[in-house]
Image (cartoon, rainbow, N blue to C red; front, side, top):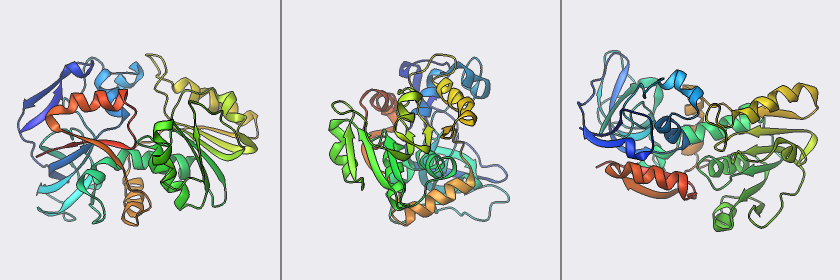
Amino acid sequence: MKAIIQCEYGTTAALSYADIPEPVAGPGQVLVRVRAAGLDPSVWHLMTGLPLIGRLALGVRRPRVPVRGWDLAGVVAAVGPGVTEFAPGDEVYGGADGAFAEFACTAAEKLLRKPANLSVEQAAALPISGMTALRGLRSVGRIAAGQRVLIIGAGGGVGHLAVQLAVHDGAHVTGVCSAAKRDFVAALGTERVIDYTSEKLTGVYDLVLDMAGNRPLSQLRELLTPTGTVVLGGGENGGRWFGGTERSMGAMLLSPLVKQRLCGLLSLPNPADLAAVGELAAAGAMVPRIDRTFALADAAAAIDYLTGSHPAGKVVLTVS
């Protein structure tokens, strides 16, 4: 089968479109014929091996899993022993190590049946970004109906899903984005859009979700009510060792000393969050918008586009 593989950390030049053996479903696993695979910043982090602290889990000298990609949507090709919830032919989506391939094996608990209202591309775009938005707003942010919520990076892969979720949960949402994404973010249901390239961030908010990752914590605290909450995601502008997590660590150390809640966002995939995201998607409350699709063979170009062009919504690979 064809797959996007990587034997050493590096730029997109380290990626290869190659033939590798088709995986076989073991006990509790499902073999998926991949139709689409989603991209998010974690793909770039694994490709480059940055921040360096992440290599302790992903592979010290080279990626432990050579095939790139996490999110997928497709059709069940086979099931391993013990799997009863899926059968060949089922349309599914979810997570798998090595999603940038024609076939991928994953644990049955990491998959859901694809909602009928989502295209295969939308389903592939949803898992990681959807779970991150869910955790940032509900689990960490403790969003409540009627709150004033500011979402920084509202036009991005996580941000545009967070806007939809906040609106669904009854919040008064202000989105921060570039001028090019103003109409895109407004159409998601925001009550106000701030163009960060020409406007100062203003207002007072109960909850700030920062998915852009480059504003000082002191500036974000000025936007909060005396007992408001800031949730720090993103962090793409940090150093080689910790990748911006220093800001989150500093916030968590300061939080017990002040009345405001200052929280870092660490979102690890889990079946409960995936199920919640699936219910929201099926109800139309969290539906990915696709900025652009690329063929599997063009994965390198897709990653360069994701990291360099600030897409509105999600970028997806399609697999024939």
